[in-house]
Amino acid sequence: MKKYLAEMVGTFVLTFLGCGTAVALGCGSDTASIVGTAVAFGLSVVAMAYTIGGISGCHINPAITLGVFLSGRMGAKDCGMYMLSQVVGAIIAAAALAGIVASAGPDAVITTATGANGCTFGVANALIVEVVLTMIFVLVVLGATSKTNGATNNFAGLAIGLSLILIHLVGIHFTGTSVNPARSIGPALFEGGEALANVWVFIIGPLAGGALAACLWKVIGQEN
Image (cartoon, rainbow, N blue to C red; front, top):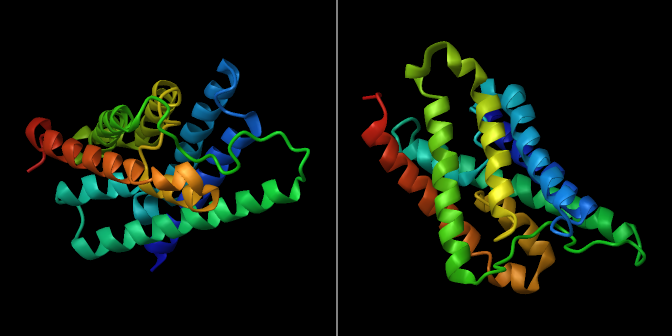
């Protein structure tokens, strides 16, 4: 149970700090807010990688868990429990963030109360962006944590976190960047409206991207 709890806590931290930064900075209003949000998500992953990596591997993302499962690195039971724990952690984080926003009063200037994702350039484009960006991200995760990497494995958390910053810098303009179904489900439940209606894009897209990354890694990776 410790690894499932670790995944819940890790996803809570990622969602609360990442989405919390997006809310606090009014992400999308200017370049500084976009960069700040991207860095927040990346640093959250780095922090959690070195906090719970030794316990659960620090997936904190159902798309990564799916990629790891399809790569043969974990069983079906753990895969399902990891995903459930991640979604629960994200929902708790979104609830906490929504409560903080609500207590701030009507004068608080907040564009999206929980950091929910959106399909700014249409559903089809959003789906493509999420699939491609998640595929790249999960591929980095699979490669950085591969046993064939030897000593560089010690820097996996840093490589993964930095890649997430890059991915957010590209994706925020188009979708707000999810590449993580749990991180999108939690905020969407409290945001409601269009965010909840379109949340399927940020579930299907990242999971498809994670599956594609696993297939690609089986081709180019050196593991049996």
